[in-house]
Amino acid sequence: MTTLIYQLKITLNHIEPPIWRLVLVSSEVTLAKLHKVIQEVMGWENSHLHIFIIKDENYTAPLPGDPYHLVELRAKSSSRVKLDSLKLGCVDILT
Image (cartoon, rainbow, N blue to C red; front, side):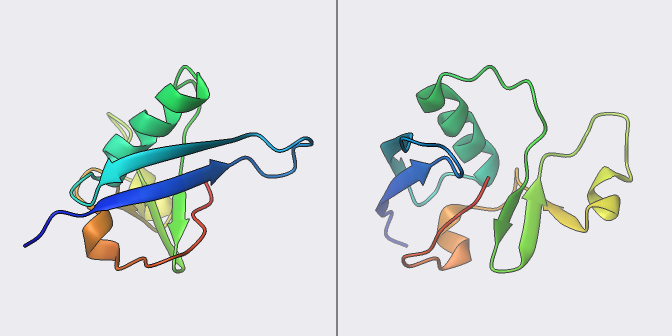
């Protein structure tokens, strides 16, 4: 399988003037690692829970000690899903 490089424009919703970052990531990066990239490029400190909503699917990190967290959110673990497996093309990813 060929590893691709995705160019992602990450834009915060409902902010004027727009705040955005342009990043390059491997198609092999997991959503969990993408979350860490977003935290870094935005200068955030990972102090809130996150959820990716992509093509009507929810992805988030499991909470330690809470085996029902993913079930309650109807979410899949973001630690196992690679960007390449999502077949994104050109879409908006809201976080």
